[in-house]
Image 1 (tube, rainbow, N blue to C red):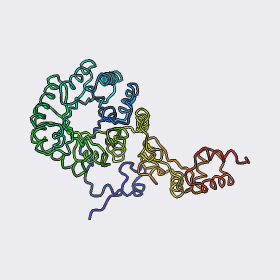
Image 2: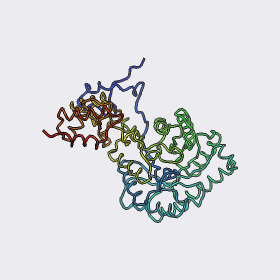
Image 3: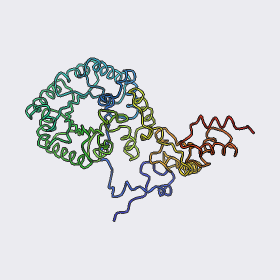
Image 4: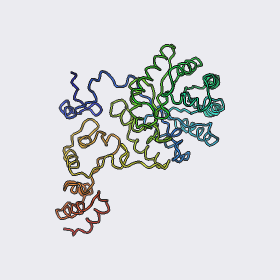
Length: 430
């Protein structure tokens, strides 16, 4: 029987093993070596796949530039800056973003999406030549039997499209990734022919897509292992990307599983925006990578990034959304609040995280630029009221505490700040 180690893997104890003994990490049971076998790379698809959602607004170019800067600050490897084959506005935005990356000397790389047709790749070549910014063309092609049936495609058609598109890109010295749509429902016989053909043409990155959110973690492992073996057999240096959607609610775990099984890069969008129920949430991927010790970048801008995406695309953030939701670090429950308050008074720290940040939270708020919030409601205790007042530098007299407490207990919800302030203003001053 394997005995799990007691550790704080992501927020190690600052003052020795005694603190580490306070958190028993079941995630590390049977763990041997690193979770992820290679450095983690991220591709942010918010400005391409994300804005394909039928419910979002395509942000103005100045906001897109701000979002690119925040992606860069967060350490995201590359951003998909658009699909120029969609029309002139898309071309203009791609050009403007490429110029911004160049002029601001951002470290983030640029990619563009394109169908496996020359007319989609040509504007990428043109923007690359005009701006001097290296852009990787992510050329996509539907490959599953169900898609081939609907489109009346056959294998010869797929091979011919792949040949024309990749040959044109390579001829124009454009780096190209081969994206098989619906990879997770495509049989190995089809993938084998297409992947080998793309590699022979000069493609050095294969993108495995869970286009309709079909796959489970077992399928991720099976597909990546199979693809890696195929690449080894070719003798070429070819990278693997994972691009997942969230139809079964598995977008984020599948992305993490992909990295664990050897994918070089995973894709996602802010808040998971995208078609149908959306893509894997890149913000949630970053949170998990940070807590697993695999993301060394500053993440204090992550909340700002998500909120700007929400504002710019007109997407509402659910109150219970991880990290950036209104309730992510908020409680009005007496037992929980009392524990947080006691922990805060102790002031003990675990590396980057304070005791108050881990007592009732698996995500330390402070690491991501947020803090614990204690409210007052019908499930609260007197400590909630006293804490609320003290945080706002209001003298917590017994009469005032009891007046607020009575109001809370007579309610069926958490009190609004204005309701509490109203009681404070009406309370006689000592």
